[in-house]
Amino acid sequence: MAELPPILAVFAHPDDEAFPTGGTLAHYARRGHPVYLACATRGEAGQLKDPALPVEDMGAWRTRELEASCRALGLQPPIFLGYRDSGRNERLRRDDPQALHNANLWEVEAKIRELIAELQPRILITFDPHGGYGHPDHLVIHRATTAAFFSTGHLPNPPARLFYSVFTSEYAAAMQQSGQANSILGGLDPQVFGVAENTLAVRMNVQAYLPQKRAAIAAHRSQFADRIQAMNATLEQQTLMEQLISVETFALGGTRGPIPHWPLQDLFDGL
Image (cartoon, rainbow, N blue to C red; front, side, top):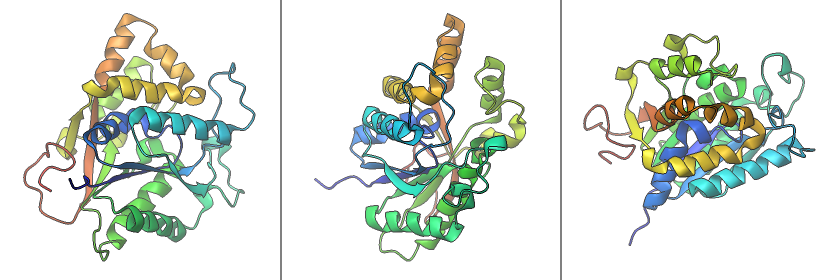
């Protein structure tokens, strides 16, 4: 029996995979696709959200959290690209030459291109053009992964499609109203950082994978402890958050062949 085609998701930090794509990645892993996650940094600049954790080395701690998340979702062990977390806003590491924000974009693209040549993914997934909420590291990975999709077309078996993880404007507004924005979506215009419904190429119902997705979110306790607590504060909050995390949405960033219809039923529809 032939092996099902691989998927490669490329993100910037440990935890970037959990909320927006965890259910989708778990779905394809369960179906037998090899699902790989490339992570540009080890999240060294993360802020500790649970002071009870004995964290001495944030990068090492978050590496273990990502490994646990990948196990929960059924993914292959994470692949690290070797950069440092740049932080953001007032914590932006402008003078750190190893910070992803300061990296040579062509070098980042080359590393992703090498992974594509080695793993031969049929589907490539990364951040949308706004980097979700404008994080500088997310923007670097969006640009480098998009460039790598287009610069690998000469390979014998290049990726067939590039998808961007996106959320709708309605989702962004609901997150803000729920109190879950936690300074990430807070203050951002939902009609700028979210997309219109007609932009969606794929809407994945991941209700069946909520146990795996919740386990992946819980694995990132150092970053999500406050959000997990808020999600479970009241029955109303639990119900709202279950609705919000039960659907994952994607825009089409690139394709090497025709699209059979719009929207697609899933990432491989028509391939």
